Length: 383
Image 1 (cartoon, rainbow, N blue to C red):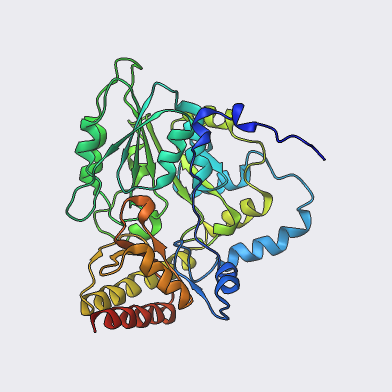
Image 2: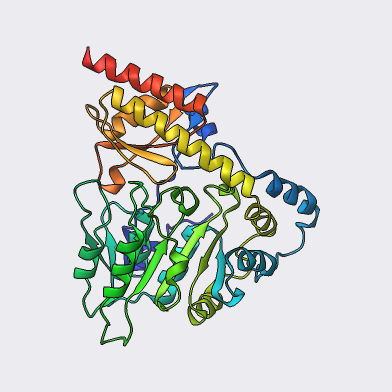
């Protein structure tokens, strides 16, 4: 046994010393154990309550005996399936272990100490974390106050000669709001040329909730803007509508040269074998997508109606979750009260929205239980 404690902090990178970890939503088993509950429902992490595609499950069952082999490091079959689905060459497609790894790969590839990265306030926290990890400067731009929507023109106004990249989430997590096709087109067209780099800043377009947002008539498909915008990187995930969050697999589209550099720096075998075969099957399961879209569309209407009855403020969402006001409670307080009732939600303090809570749209039975508990808590406070 060592007698002296190693002073590890002396060799840790400076930016990592006060680095705050991402706080993931608590699991069902954790809450059962902590609160002694037999039944718990999770409406915190925007997972698909219908579960994974049956085609994906069958693909896993058909291939699980081969897990002693390393996976195809290039994810060729998955890329080929994505290529055929989206009618894009394989050379414009990359894969990763979820959207989180994509964000970090982009940061590791492009961000230096002297660079500025423009990010909207109240957007996915992992962008700012990746910027900090690379010791770059995050330039935070306020959202439009009305509706908590990205202010794309304000993002443009924040660009300087040091701006290396801009993150845009469409629709945004955690607000659920989105920017229209005309707004995105104007934004990309008006991006200033950076004299220092000789190109426009990179635009990283996060479309994790793309399939849900397609239900909105004026929602844009980021792939339509790839041609003519070599500075654009679009990425999506299999964690949401495809129900494969536990397998961690994401994918992206970009100019051939950008993809080439991402392929150079990504870890080998970063997308595991079962994730590859499951994702390739899931992307072809149109029935799963349609069922999931229908559920979210119908249940959002139900939740909106119930929020209005209870006079609870909420934000219209293009995703599979709804951000709502926790008043008269603080978000963390309401989150804690729901935990005791066996329902896991997500408070929004880390997004600087201390009086809001995000609820994932579940099955109708789960949503009814959520509304029942919310009604009980509000009525108790009002009485």
